[in-house]
Length: 225
Image (cartoon, rainbow, N blue to C red; front, side, top):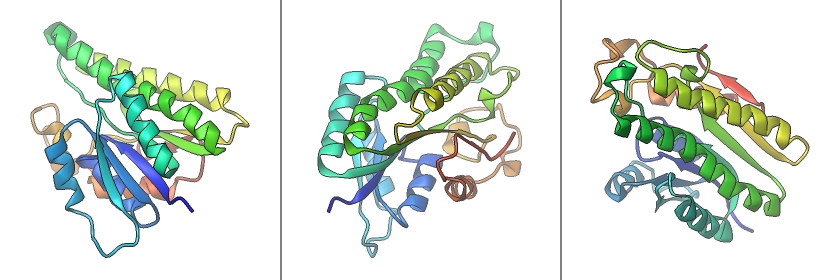
């Protein structure tokens, strides 16, 4: 019997890695990321005493052909329970200070980097007969924020995408979920002064635990509003 697996994009650090540790208690975990050294380091943080396995695949989620190939190789060998689209990035400045590269990178990573894995996984979930897709959005998908215009635009896009899939996939046995949380104390903020006091932020481990506790096929999970 094939082992059930959770795929997590952006799984090499932060919330992605924290979610991996939570799901590793009951599932095999496959981490997806662009940087192999980071993924290798992430793998070392897991206990080898578990019966479950942890693996990784190097993949650029903004490149559909690459995503499709990687996902096919995973589904060929494992029964996938859940895809978590966690990969994301943000550049927090007034719009007029954002470069074209900043804008493109945010939209490609946050929007295409969610849509492409979902699109690649859907027919594979169909063949399996069931599946789940969890999109990590943040409260930036609920309301606009100062110096986050393009970041919020990318997260509003993912919110609309997810809400549409809830309707489109109704009755298919494949469940999309949108997850909304505020800022966390992760490497996401290492090169930013957008958050002045990171001590007030929740840890990735705390947020991951709260997400897993609410993972029951509901269409929305709210950690913060």
